[in-house]
Amino acid sequence: MSQMEKMVEIVDVKSVDRLAQILGAFDENLNFLSKELGIVGYVDGVKIRLEGDVEGTRVGAQVLRELSKMAENGEAVDVGRMAYCIELAKEGRAGEIASLEGGVVAITARGKQIKCKTVGQKNYVDAIKKSTVVFGVGPAGTGKTYLAVCMAVSAFKSRQVEKIILTRPAVEAGEKLGFLPGDLQTKVDPYLRPLYDALQELLGLETYGKLMERGAIEVAPLAYMRGRTLSNAFIILDEAQNTTKEQMKMFLTRMGEGSKMVVTGDVTQIDLDGKDSGLVHATNILDGVEGISVCRLTAKDVVRHPLVMRIIRAYEKDVEKETERKKAKKLVEKKAEDDFGKEKDER
Image (cartoon, rainbow, N blue to C red):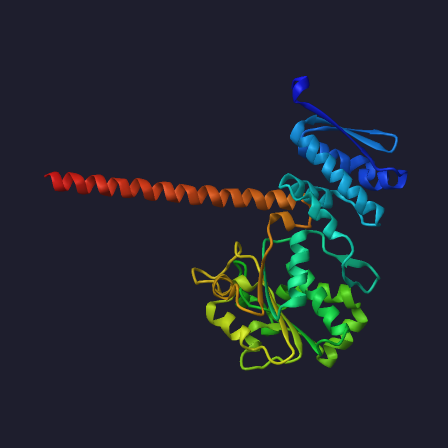
């Protein structure tokens, strides 16, 4: 790399404590930033010196300045947040990083504050606050279900609703429920475990148990919703990609007065053996209807290990390549048909 191609940026974080937050344990945050952008980072007192190509250095400096402001306001900085901020800055959206400050969604039974970690998550939570029906569509790890449960518990605690209802379609991910022991409830309980876990974390085991006994919290398979009217309730349909069009219509028309619905799913994980997904159909025909919001989360909103984001991207690229291959194949086949037709006409 020539001298002309190099760029140096110095970010002054002005505080040893803030510097420690930004660097992370054993400088893991700074090392991650340097590796992702292909630049070099040095610490000089309470300043961070970045050196490398113009674009990488510029993005790195933007990220560090925004994270410094967040650290000053008491926000945690980790590798996951660093990775997300890098993505925003690359897209020219570094200014949106500040919007992630504050905004407590819920508080767990142990006092931990749950906050939105991405702009997509914040838009999703805002949509749940404003709309009666919200579709949260996106890959695994984006917090679709967990944030919906947080909002349900928050609405219940503030007495906006009298009941929380959580449901999932009883469709197996390549396995057969019929061979498992017990009745239908026992068979589907393992598939509802993520919902149980979220509720227990937010409410505490004792409170969760009491509310379940009172019927204030109901966790049931989607089949149990048929024929009911669900009033004054916060209703969450999880794994909605595995509903049929008929099941989705049945679910959405259960809503009564004073209720709110959140429908979550990942359209890349459909287990319907060739049937059309009710989630895909519903988001297509209901997007734009008053009172309904469709929020589409992406790989950038993944809040699990940064590697999960890379895995999802790799699969997305593979899908894109396969789509291109199919298009190219169709063009070749069409050309062959056209050529054959021309030869036939000439004869």
